[in-house]
Length: 251
Ligand SMILES: [Fe+2]
Image 1 (cartoon, rainbow, N blue to C red):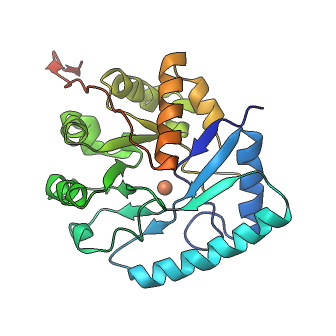
Image 2: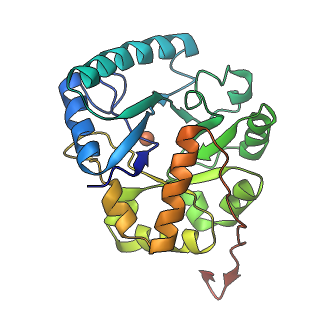
């Protein structure tokens, strides 16, 4: 297996969120990542501004990362890893020390939007984050009903400089979500593929399978983008196309 993939969104750190519940699950998932051809991982535990402080979050993440790094060294796993976070959207985001929340050593920050409602202030918040020199990556953009209903929202965010990430599961499971994602890809509104893995049973590591669902040139572009993000280098997002509503369909 070629080790040519990078997973930018996963919940593999032990005991910190709803992902891996202990170190042995963490190590099982990391071995699965390696078997899948993943060479680099960004650990992105959930961060909720309303539930915890930045300091508490950073301390917990540091402990979990230390434990994981020691086990990775001990088992000699050929894996490059860094800390990040999946930051739940809050208009307070620009007031926080974003260095703690971005992918370590890079300007990229993974932001999750609510699935239950369309919050106000997304555009202003993303703009303010970018003004501080960070590039927002919108997590699993296939999961927001208001974006499915009106994909011009995603077009606007991407046109303003955000990157968009999708979960491999959405492609692998097929059906409605996979068709939706193929449309987003056609409009050039997707830049990154990741696992969002939480557990070996329910939300597993499946990056290779996700890439296999994509046309070769698209897969190569997204793979390369993920490497660029991991290394903290710029991503060329290309030109997005604005979705148009025609006869009851977005085209
Ligand atoms: Fe996630």
